[in-house]
Length: 264
Image (cartoon, rainbow, N blue to C red; front, side, top):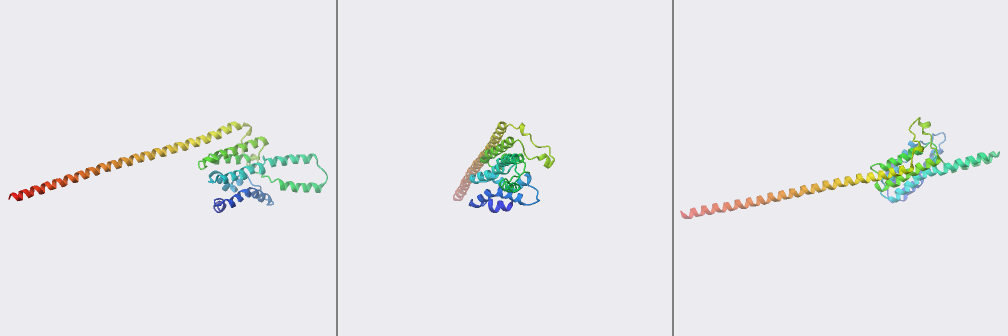
C-alpha cells in the first residue's frame, strides 16, 4: 500500500494514477476469486487493500481524481461486486429463472455456469454495512477536506438505500459471531440525511470558531507589538531628552570655568 500510494497515486500527471483507479477494484476481485482454495476477502481485508484509495477520497487535492476514485472504487464496489448490488441481484434472479426452466442438457448447463462465473464476480464475504460505516467515518474525520464531506455522506446514504432495497447483507454474525449488526429496518433515510447535513454544519461551525480564535490571537499580538513600539519610542524620546540636558549642563560648566579663569 505504501509503494502504491507514494510511487503512483500521489504522482503527476494524472494519467497513470487514473488508470490504476480504473482497474484496481476489478483486478482485486479477480485476483481474490482466482486463487483456488483461498478464503474469500472479508470486509476488513477489503478495507486494508483499498486503504490508499480511501485516503484519496478524503484528501486528494485534485477534485477530478477524487471524484473518479469515489465512483470507480466506492460506487463500483457497491453496484458491481457487493452482495446487494445490481449485478448480484441480477445473478439471484437469473439463478431463479434457470431453476424454473431447468433442462437435462448437462453440457449446456456447464457452459452457462462458466459464463455466469465470468460475468458475476461478487465479494460474498464483504459486509456492505461495514463499508458504509467506514465511508461515514472517513467523511466525519477531521482530516477529510470539507469539500468532499457531502459526496462521501451521499455515498454512505446510497449504500444504506441499496442494503434496504435488497433486504439482506452478508451474515456478519455467522462470520464473526458478532451481535453488533445494525437492524436496517430501524434506519430512517431522511433522518440519516439530516444527520449527515448536521455533521457538515458542525464541521463548518468548528472551523469558523477556530478561525475566529486565530484572528483574535493575531489581533492581540499586533496590539502587544504596537504597545512595545510605543514604549520603546517613549523611552527613546526620554533618552534623547536626557542626553540633550546633559550636554547643556556640560556647556554651562565649561562656560563658568572659562569666566572664572578670565577673571583671574
